Length: 121
Image (cartoon, rainbow, N blue to C red; front, side, top):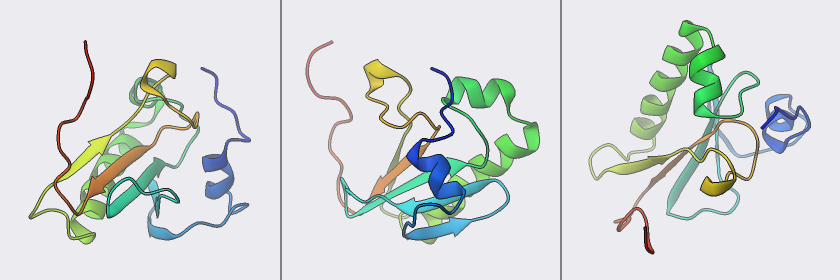
C-alpha cells in the first residue's frame, strides 16, 4: 500500500483537521479517537510518511523509531493506564482492517478488554 498524503492522519499532522490532541513531541502525535472502542482510546501516529509497522521499521531513522516507541509508553502512563493495564493494536493492511494508510497505534484501556480475537482461525 502506497502512502497517501491526503489521508486523514496526514491532514491532522499538518493541522488541516482538528482533533482532541493529548500528546505531541518531535516523534509522535497522539489524540483521542472520535469513535472510542474503550473508555480510553488514544491513537498515536509517528511524524513521517509511514503506512505500516514494516514500512516504519525499515525506512524510519533509528531516532524516530526509538522516540515513537517511547512516546507510546509515555502516553499510556500519562493516561493512567499503567496500573490496570492496556492494549496496543496496530492494524496493517486489508486483512487487518487498516482504515487509514498511515501507521498508527491504538491504545485501549479503562476497563477489562476481554479476548483479543474472536471467531475461528
